[in-house]
Image (tube, rainbow, N blue to C red; front, side, top):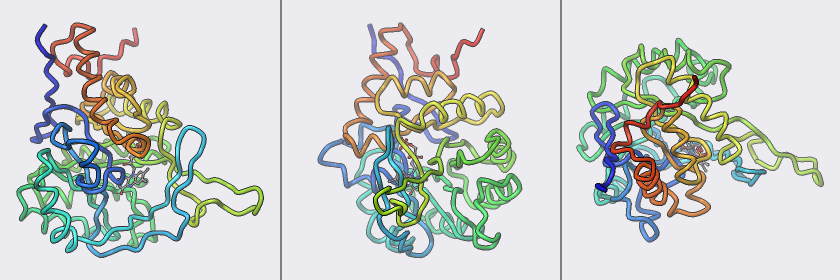
Length: 306
Ligand SMILES: Cc1cc2nc3c(=O)[nH]c(=O)nc-3n(C[C@H](O)[C@H](O)[C@H](O)COP(=O)(O)O)c2cc1C
């Protein structure tokens, strides 16, 4: 039997397979090169970059929890200039599509970073990380506000013709409303989901485990909630979805595709075993062959609820 077709498209971005690595869990693509050939992945999403260098939150920034981990990195990064000078040249050789995750402390900052990156053709697409506090709006999280989300997406859309993916926070009561605002703002796709707000307590010291007190929960613990959000959004808007949250193996990824994701991203699993994204690519292909599908697109949104 011939190999199933794994190609998918997110806006104008054509991927050889639907498996990406999630922002912040794979550095800038080169860090894991000894374990994984990035050229076999659908795409790499970089750690979020911001215009200016950011120190990040005070340590400890990471802790393990049951079925997952908490992180409060606080968007630590060296800033746009360093990214262009130091990181981008190495990304060029990765042999796969590069999606740059862009964050911002103000609405304009997103556009400024994207305008600067438009000069580099190796940047295939942008993922807007709008789960950042916005200092113009009293540190309101953009993706928790429909109007603000719509404004930021609409403004950024004016700045680029490249594929624009907007990543949403799950820390809202109705994610479909935010997803609708993203669609109305003119984006090409949504990424679902960023981490769930959580915390951990050290009972010996009665202190929070994380220096930031709260942090974002990721890993298998969040998979059912992430999957539910993908399915809800798939039923409400027409944009392609990049699904993520606790994908540890190919079967997890297939669940996301069936629920409506066009592509998936592997995050926390990279810390357990950086070969996971490749195993997911191969496992999706095996699943399709075993179930007599010729094309991964037949699976997308095929959830049978009758
Ligand atoms: C250590 C760590 C750092 C992360 N950094 C970012 C980041 O810089 N930008 C972003 O959009 N998401 C970031 N995320 C969120 C992931 O990209 C992903 O949305 C989330 O972890 C859910 O997927 P997972 O359960 O497979 O990890 C980070 C997650 C972790 C665990």
